[in-house]
Length: 92
Image (cartoon, rainbow, N blue to C red; front, side, top):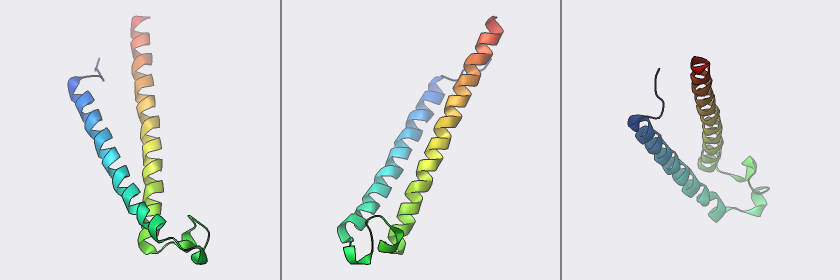
């Protein structure tokens, strides 16, 4: 039976989390451009009408990155669940 909590997997997990944080930091800093140059005359706050092309791309990228992270968390929970149910079936 394969172990999922090996040193290699833990290190890869930590590196992936750090990479994920770097992407969030980059997108967050890029979104600060919108906050700095927001004008009420262009539209409601955080609406696509009030954003230029760069700000729209960052906003959409942030939402896509959130969806990817949610799917990844669901996948990890599924893999851990499958691992522990397999262990339980082996011991029963």
